[in-house]
Image (cartoon, rainbow, N blue to C red):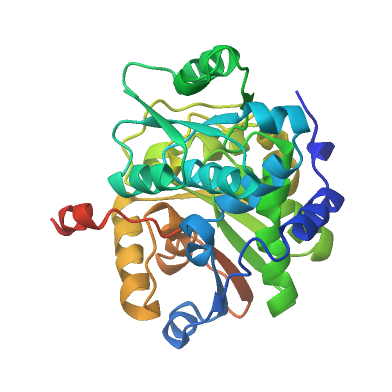
Length: 328
């Protein structure tokens, strides 16, 4: 298994240089009511304003930019429920690299539509019947429908050193803007974002605690962290579709164990309440997965009064046609 030094702060800083002028430098928002409620200073790093509506563009562009000329010509393939899909599709469009995306057929329609709008080929599968990793690897070997006999380069959504390094630029920007932090809260699916952000944070602010947040219904990373043994989950029924990953990866698991201080979970009800709170009070559109880190703080799962706290809002790709169901 790769060790925790598979990605370093030097890699994250190099990714920041590659992304300069390409990725958005997303805003940091504050809220008096949040500060009063938590008795702390809270800074929300709003990756819902990133290109494609989520932090994933950072890692996708950083990874595609470093492909060889031959790999770029043949194209790339990935699997994703939506945000990494859109990120690879847009990065491919910007770099003129053909992209094929394997998506579950129940992925939010808004994410499917956006992925296709960037020119990517989308292949749908039934998540109850098909293993997405196996399907994607098979397609990568033979080439997808429109590119038969042309081997494609697989860029997984989180378990890739260049992806992890790109995601870590989120924390670099936050720290550059607000300075000292005592605590950083980050959502966790496959571990790419929290790994990269923890690497950056521990390099610049060694005393800052980094805590990952998962849905209770998809708690594989939390169980893995506390047991020190890789745990899995199969198709968890959580509203946070970006956290339905089966497990941490071979690259991200050692990184999480080494750099992250703790992992916690939040309920489905807490996710929904927090998402609506952010919509109503901060006036920003946040998707369920994007609200995970904030939920841990606002619901009292993590308490750190009299401190400076960073919270990563990871994305804002909400399927508005489905929002009404959340009120029932």
